[in-house]
Image (tube, rainbow, N blue to C red; front, top):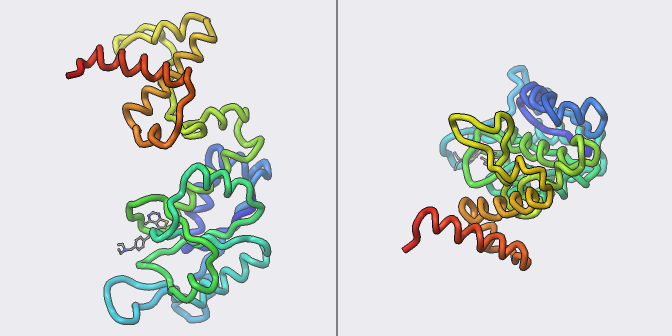
Length: 250
Ligand code: 9D3
């Protein structure tokens, strides 16, 4: 995955991507990141990248020309890239889209600031628009960084084991089970005894049941759009019965 970002804050983007799992993927050449600052593609003394909106109203709008020249420079590096605009108007990002991004060779992310960018640039140059969710951020950088992080984790060899990606929350549509480490006994509570039993079949069963139960409690909407197989349904039924016994129902 080779990505370029058009951003007025290349330092923030590069610093963020240099850390942790993504930083290691960069060092090991699993991904490649380039930044292009529209401000470097201005022609006036003030290095102007925005102007007031025609028709009036609050905020500023990003100019076509600096963006277009920055995009042309990115295109020289990534000639086959699709152009993805970070935008609240876009399709909502999810794990399926992360998988899709992780399998692409080249992507150019356009990060907007201010109230937005001139619609003529969007219409002529952008292939798709993507949103991180239904909330307002100050620009496209943080959403783009989150998407690049999510996609990078899915590239083979980036995580220590492919297993950890497979077992990641959401990969099978369920939330993660709870985790515990030493000490087994603590004033905040004990570790569930099944995890200390050494019975790996029982542990796997318990974890699956917890994943189903946590999803049922916290994100029932996720269960609504999947059909559980018989063993999963039985595990969940038992979880719900125990939960209702503990909390009292009706
Ligand atoms: C309703 C007027 N503006 C809100 C004060 C619109 C607006 C302009 C610029 C909203 C957001 C932004 C900057 N954010 C993004 O460009 C953005 C974004 C987001 O705000 N939420 C989720 N995903 C994304 S991707 C890019």
